[in-house]
Length: 315
Image (cartoon, rainbow, N blue to C red):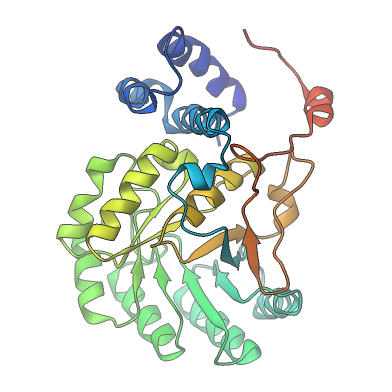
């Protein structure tokens, strides 16, 4: 990960001049200008600014952000997403503990060895039962042959989706894999950053789902457009965990504003990804996460904590 100082420098050097004297409600016009400097700033900076503009727009309208985005519902099913763990027993222990706490779905980030990955998936399925929703995210670990072996195995175990089995630029083999497997394939988390990069994945039928998040796609504007593109092709748009509390709060507002987003990812261990808010997102007794109803993001920022951790003030 890049240090925050790089983002700070990019915000001041490239993005601040774009924003000065602009009407913040003109998000589309600003977004065009931001993406013109994306090769200089990276999408993480653009994503942060884009979220701030949407937050401000919703506050001006005195609406929760999810309603400002169109409003579809106010809560969504959450799933716990594992870190990479050292043993089958560790995955089983984590999954059973999360199930006991009310989580209704679990995604495995496996050891990244095909044989061990199949063993882990089988052990977790046996421990949690056949009616519990499970997914596998292999984080680009396999070549085509190994990916097919793992895919066929978890297909027999009734896993819900198979995420990122191949290198993120291997569209040819994604197409073949999707043709040969029955389990839905999830891709496009990292290989694309702008709206224009998605159509080839759709037209080549290389994935069953499109994927996105705040820092990797440049914010809410691109995410909403991509989600609606997916909807036009009868596809779901599932949102990737974004690493910190404010990004994930923005992700949640987008998720509940969309009809074609089914679940909300929460990376484990949950606490290590929470920072800077007085009130964090938590699941209810039914495994749902509810979007705040205050204006904008509805974030209760812990300014005292931020003040105590400040190393530099930018201007």
